[in-house]
Length: 64
Image 1 (cartoon, rainbow, N blue to C red):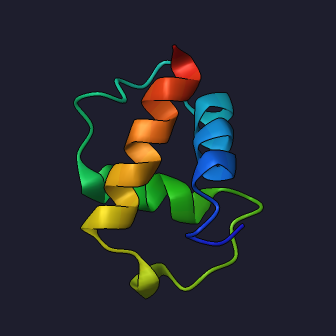
Image 2 (tube, one colour):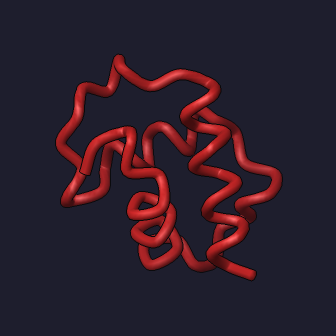
């Protein structure tokens, strides 16, 4: 997975952290969790607030 795979990342995060409060989530935590996903293989430095916000929104939608 790469940073652009927002929906795929959101699904993987829901599977890895189903108990997480994904609405009130710090982007530093979100960044660390994405980088820790087993299938994630992109440069951690390539993320930004816009990408992390898109992942968070997709994760919230995925849970609903």
